[in-house]
Length: 337
Image (cartoon, rainbow, N blue to C red):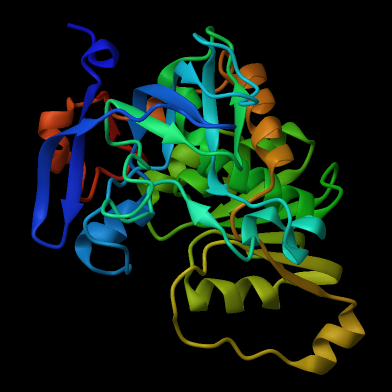
């Protein structure tokens, strides 16, 4: 029997005591809200950090914020049709606060986040590790062509869109010497996107398997020389310091991987001044970046081996088997609820 007609859905509820499956009542979408049937959810590193205790999160909750699915119900003014295949943003913004008005909706003063909300709150069905997810008003959605495989589309809502924001912060890329630090999902996506824009891309990562994987997306081996632009997706203080030291005159360092507290990095103000250097950070992204992510994946899914980055999905009942480390040549586990 269809879960929508039963008004129940199945969800994996995570808590500090573990993960259990539970039937959850399906809500009726209100104004601006969408109810989406999740086809595939990929497992982001932040969820692994939550499960391992490295990242604080509401407990209990439904995790999962990278996913693709189809709209099965829509409230008034939701802006989507029943049956549309969509990906969605990590953040739900109010659209009215000073930050939203300045264009920083991802840092909304009242932001709520997909896959990061308490199950016991007013948005229990907030994560992708469930058969359905409710997307409230303020969550951005982008339609995805049917030709783009689920495993390619799902990471758009976190990894790919974040990379699009990082590239925007870096500025012009054509003909520039680019260093990407960290060959995880974001780093390899950045390699592909920078190469696509005509950059000369080098990769650094301590693991040979990851460096080899990055070369399949357009990276060259690092030669240790000066660069015009450096991206750090590793979060490693040592990598950040090394990247800063390699910027040529007028260079830019974009930090996107430092999302947990860590050691500080020494910065020589004179070197920044005399070198005309720019250091900037990116956390989450704006709706335009999600649209750019879908456009990029739609254009490149035939020419780049995106599908090889995602493991074959497990069912919801086996979700605990993928909430842990994956082989280094597989950057995302996945769940097909």
